[in-house]
Length: 233
Image (tube, rainbow, N blue to C red; front, side, top):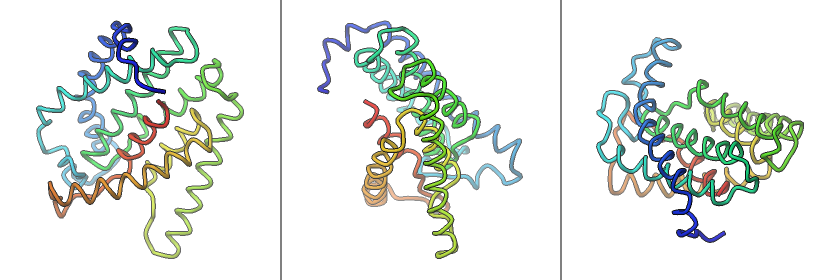
């Protein structure tokens, strides 16, 4: 569907709400991983470092501008394209977009996808299916998550046995399973396909023009989020 800017501007309450939530997202993207590391791991926080530089780096000033703009656009677009006119249906899609954006920020900085965020995303997908906001039933939604978890978990196990290292992180697996509650198995397969392509291109471009710290790891989560948002929209 082509982006109709006039219709988007007609949803100005969603623009404003999305911008406010987007501004709020910037701080939890640092607070949540810091709390997770404090309570669930003994490793120092500076060991968890993605391209964003980890928790020791200050929040980039530009992030306080582009995150609200992106989130506002996602909320307005969710309002414009919602197949169900109810307020809660629009809020469901908007909340999904914001949660994905939050996860992308966390993973970019720390290579973490915290259960504190991922698991509620899956529960929300089940609830959305139960409420009729998703195109499939609650049973299909739950079964899709199980299939995705089993499929990619099995592939990761095989890769581990052959190569001696995991081909995909546990957080990525849980995120894909959570997305399956929203879009089903086929939707997740498309997301993984495009996320894989995007990850390779993104990594090569970033290494070429920005460089990467030797301590930093390259996360898969941000590419999953971008692919998921493009697929969902």
